[in-house]
Image (cartoon, rainbow, N blue to C red):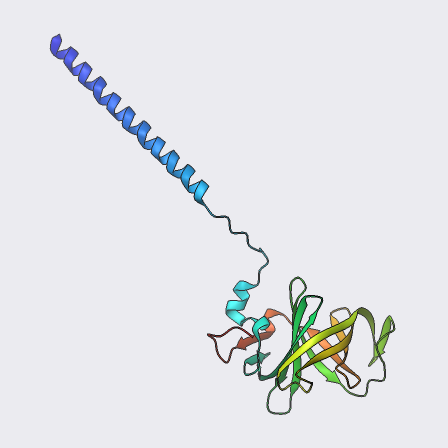
Length: 211
């Protein structure tokens, strides 16, 4: 009888030890989880950020003279870049050239999402900006925005190294029309909104992404 009692007491002691260890282990786990939650740093991020696309196609915000742009299978060199600023808002316009006679411009702005537009200059346009609507080549465009901006120029752009310019932008659906004056009269260009699949950027110096 005494032997049986000893066994029962021993079993109860073992059970008590196991319960205590489990309790302590669970307590430590809960404490570690609480500490991790307290120490976790919240890093807010834009769910519509284009960072992933930038890593694949290149960041058009960083375009500069000397970079290459592959546009729908055709390769252009960036010959010059205009940086424009109005009331703290900044955008860029980049002069592209294939070296084989094909020239174009790409404008880049965040408003608030990234917008990249391919521009081709138009000659012989008799319309001037100002009215709420203008008609060019049979297409009617509606006034979108107008103003004045400061600019700085790098590389070959055809304008001064710095100064002021005036602009008036029109729109017809996804098509764009822009009038710009850098001091020698209004020039007109037609624009086409680009998607990320339309272009790819090859920086002339990949380690230097500043402009």
